[in-house]
Length: 360
Ligand code: NAD
Image (tube, rainbow, N blue to C red; front, side):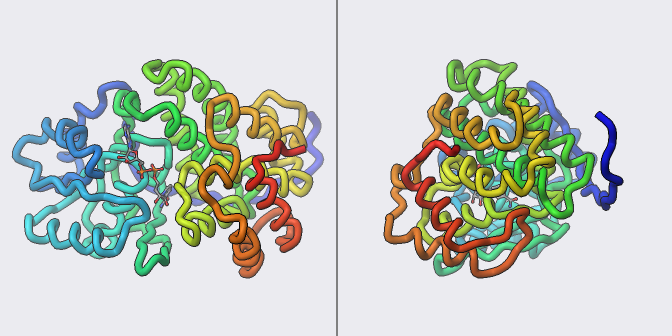
């Protein structure tokens, strides 16, 4: 194809070391040495206490303790308790074994202590690649960016994702794919992040159906975790648009589950933006094997259906009476998005997502 436009961009990569491969959790002691940490506090959710303890076992007496109380959206009380535990045990670093909730807890402690995080992700959420933190107090989630919370080392071991149930794998994968899609048309998009995003979308599109058919398929698990790394990198590198704003509002105000909400909203948010981001979304079309940007929303919806991800907000417990409020919040504060934020069109988008209608 002949070039028709000149390029203009800023590229400002984040630091961080990534170690990826089956069994690389065995390298955690070496990675801890590289960081010079000698007393790691291991973090997990209550459900993943055993996994985290097992993953940390190779560290021997370099484990200062285990704090397995991570919870969705980092409640401020949990963050305080974890900070106290870290100080009491004299921890000099954190080993976060789990999904976005566990990484988020590590970030909340690092924010005040500046101690290094070694992240071992077990979902596709992508938080491990971003300097974004969030803490929830009185039902209100405050988020921010701070380089101190960016994990220093990320250990991606696909074997640790084998236990992620098919339904959560599907939703978590679409959650991550949303990072890659919103990144394609971000105002600060750049060629490297766009390449990573396209590759991420393609890898998720081929891996997720295989994983849902056979959650034990290690090659597909590896492909999906690779896609999650790329998507998380995109999330950390460029600003997110309408899709992320809507999910943040729906999750925060109506307490909807994080990954599932992303899965439902994604085709509709992309349908809203597609006519205004045709060139950027041509990459997504290529990755999904469809003709052009206009075909991307339906392709995502069909993928969600095929992998058994939820497709309607109603099924997630969203009250119909909340759609107006969600549209108000999403349209109120301006933020970068390819298509201008029109309250009535956003309200229609939310209705489609509520009803689970196939876009286009
Ligand atoms: P999660 O971390 O809450 O995990 C969901 C459940 O799955 C938990 O019970 C967990 O223990 C379990 N689980 C995780 N991995 C498993 C595995 N391999 N096998 C079996 N069970 C497993 O869910 P999530 O979707 O990963 O993270 C959501 C949270 O992360 C939200 O609070 C969201 O806001 C945050 N997040 C933050 C960023 C950021 O950049 N700051 C990015 C993405 C998500």
